[in-house]
Image (tube, rainbow, N blue to C red):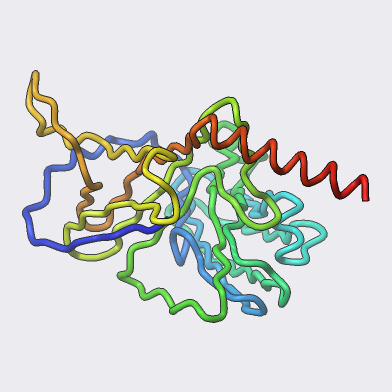
Length: 257
């Protein structure tokens, strides 16, 4: 699977900001978004918490993760930090370290940061932030700050592969982050598969016009925005059944010998 992008200059489209519900705790995560590392690397995560409320508060920070992420970091339990913040924009920062196992396999690993203040802000917490660590091969090129990033949902890695049911199509979502200062167009391709094995759907741009049928052939993203491409796998039934039949015959022959 490959994603192609093309840069071009254009005026940004208007973005209407939705007024978010006020929360007495403001959380700033640095670096934001997916973090990248290689086996044996140590990744640092900095979290600033600002108490915007009218009372002092104790804030707990910890992580929620599955067994796959536990194997990646070697954590038997989540590290925890607590902050005591006075009211009126008082803030403090904590630092967490992720030590990637030396034998870690390339892939995307999920975890969730939890910011909680059950004693002082029970109605506004816990606040959760879903995040990911992407483990790269040693041979992969380092990703620069303005390079676009890509991830797949549901997330996969060698320890958590997607299970394909031959009776129904398998749909995945490709998440694209345009971190550059230019408007980009991104196109997805699957050069290792025949065209009738998959379908790619790009989101409508909103400029097709009423009553017009327009084939959207790329994902267009403004600077510092995120978008999704839908990819559906549907191998032809006859070929898939034949592959399963051959595999079963091979297994039976092996068992007989």
